[in-house]
Length: 326
Ligand code: SD4
Image 1 (spheres, protein in one colour):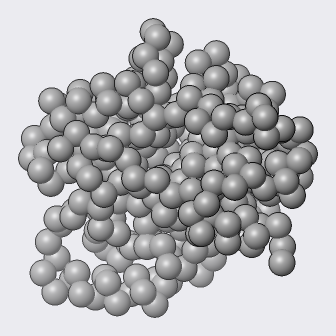
Image 2: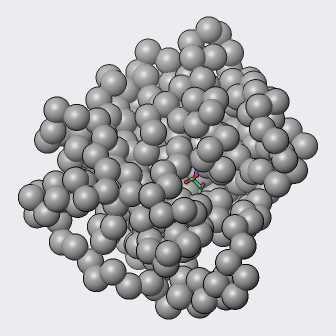
């Protein structure tokens, strides 16, 4: 059995068991081990965070780079045909076109993102190319596509996945835009990670809200909204209704609250309280945040129950329920 499969199997069993096959590379010892506060550490949004963390962990073990790890982790989700909120199999906009948003950030401030891109299987890798190969932070739409071609990315055929086609055809009967909290249209993957050497990185990738207006961009590719990372402090990522997250600069806010002394949990809770204060129709809006500080403390909080996240340390990779405001 591959290391990755073993790790997932162990996660699914829900155990928090030391896994020497992966952790040995980081010289952990059981005596020192504190699963609440541990490096390396990965946090990812939603159920798909479990296999994503596993993929990230394997990459971290291979290259030692937390940036490589968070990219590899969410690439796994970008290919998950069951996931209708990430990757080209995601639900389309109201015109029937799937457009993708992604961002990636390193704790030294390097960052890159793409928004409103079509036909790209791995927008997270394109975001990383923007970060590493251009003087810019963000490319969108046709410009992002041209850049992808120039970088040798393959353009995929523009065609809805079988599942997305069924859902879109059902939606077209009424064509009503009504996001339902925690159901299918809120499961972006955001991943934040802390390496054993204290370096932080994060990634976020999504097909955005189902049946959005053509051209709509959410929080996920907006540095400071869907993702923010600072090696001096910590990292945060977001999922949920992007408009509400952008309005409060959610991930940046959490990192700045941590800088001022709040724990990751307190910072996530304060961000959610602010989002709740600033949002109308909060009963219909879900948003969730994850945070890590540089010591390896973690936080998770959402507006409503139902948000879950995956946490991987050398002790295992477990799915946890977030607490919520309501
Ligand atoms: C967005 N935050 O585009 C994303 C939505 C989400 O899966 O979480 N979708 O607003």
